[in-house]
Structure formats: C-alpha cells, structure tokens
Image (cartoon, rainbow over all chains, first blue to last red; front, side):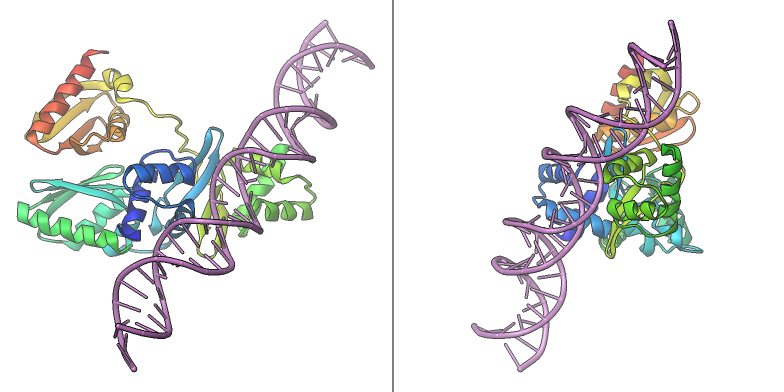
Length: 153
Length: 153
DNA sequence: TCGCCGCTTGCTTACTTATGCATTATATAA
DNA sequence: TTATATAATGCATAAGTAAGCAAGCGGCGA
C-alpha cells in the first residue's frame, strides 16, 4: 500500500473513466481498498500533473498524454514507462499492458528498441500493447521487469 | 468587445505566459481594457476547454492542442456491437472480431470499458480486433456473449 | 535503545473555481 | 419603434482544491 502504487491506480482510474472531482476519485479508490483524504489526492494529482478540464458537461480529469513531448530522439523504456503505464496482465507467453490514452505506441517502440531476446515482438493499439514472449519463462522475466519499472515513476 | 474576441485574447495570454489563477487572468485582461469578473472567466475557460494543471511550482493553465478529442458519453457494447459486427473467430484464448470499416476502435473501447475480468485487453486496428482472454474458458464465455449480442441487432 | 531526520498523511482552513438567479445587453420581428 | 426572445454578465455563494501545520512512521547512527 505505498504512495506509488496508489498513484498508479489513480492514473489508471482517470485514464479509464470520467471522474468529476477529487471527492469522487476518493470514493472510487475507497471501493478498491485505498482509504485516503482529499488532501492526499490533491497532492497526488499535483505529483502526477493530472489536468483538470472544464467542459459543458462537467469537469474532467486527464492524465498527461505524452511525457515525451519535450524530449528529442528516442526515449528509453525506463524514462517513459512509469508515466504512461496503467496496468499489466499476462497469460501463457503473452503480456497485455494497458497504458494511458495514446501511450501504447511509444512504449511498444521503446520495447522494440531494446532488442530483448525474450521478446518476439509487440503489437500496439491505442492504449493496449500485446507483447509476445519467447516462452512462459521469458514472459515471467519481462513482466517482472516491467512491473518494477512501473514502480519507479 | 465581443465575447469571442475576449476569448481569443484569453487564449493568447494563456498560450504566451504562465497564469496561475482566474483572478490573475482577470487583471491581465483589465490591463488590456477587458473588464470582466471571475465568473465570466470561469465560463470562458469552460468554453475554451482550458486545462488547469497543478505542478510542483504552482498551478498552470494550458490551451488544448487540437480541439478534436471531444467525445461525450460512451456507447455501451450492446448498443453498438450489433451494428458494427461482421464476424468472429477464435483460437486458444484469443478472439478475432472482424467489424465493418472503422468499427474496430469503438467496439474495442466499449469492451475495455466493461472491465470484464475475462478480458486481459484488446487491440484494435481498422476493422479487426484482437481480444486477449485470460484463459481458454474465459475466451469461451466472451465469444458466446459477443455472438449473442451480435444476434440482437 | 534513544534521538534525529525525512517522508507521508490527516485536519483545518485559505484559496480558487463554478453556478443559480436576476439583470442587462443584443438581436429579431411586427 | 416596441414587444419579445436569446445571450451575456454580475452578484452572491456553493462546490471544489490547495496548503500550513503537526502527528505518525520508519530508517539510521551514536
């Protein structure tokens, strides 16, 4: 139950569904077992640079699209993964990574660029990446590494 | 001195320099001859979809890049699937759904939004969706459901 | 073990933004 | 012009967010 884990969950929630206030977010977190106050969420959202956008139909929050907008050349996986990552799951030799909106392409590209022999290839959609690994054990190594990277944001 | 002109000025100011609050913006406008209240600015910023981003060094506003991403409300899977579905096939824990042209993205998004634990994730192309399921039996359930939905059109 | 330090959090309150309602300006039609 | 409708705005206040402060916690060296 660390701060970092909580912030990852926050990013995922906000990337996934409309949230209209920090109080609403607080309740969504509470449903998942995270019990914190609005104060803490205010600070989390500052840390995550989560934008608050007013629209005709109400307030919306959004996770920053690409942390990459300011960088030139290739981003390393380590540098962008924590910012764009939402969650991860796997089955057999496949890993499915969920990312924030528009986050799949850059992450997939960064993974490809690593040339990791455990990874046969990646397929990226809008906010989902399928990683095909060489074997189940390869998948285990890759997933472990990604999860640890995710925590370093 | 129309509302539209004022909003244009607001966009320019915010694009040009850091503004930390609507009150600060009000003063900047006043210097240029626009005398309005914070209420009006709140409404202007809603109209312009100006985002408020908290950072470690204070609040900042930013104007939306391209005002393209304005999707309101989301379609349920049941409501759109019958219209967009073409055919379906599967192997192991994977499902491949073929859709009408441009139908893949919205369906994939609707599937994602359901949060079905049987579904690890989806990857959508132009008219094809790959659905990665948690297991073969999960795949069975998901495919059956989709096929039944398809019949209801 | 004790005391210090840094990090995180809740409490409380200051600050900021959004909005219901009433009023005023602007447009439209006869 | 006058009547009528629509949009824009201000006022007052509700709703929402941020921040100072102190308490709680864990690590670390004396």
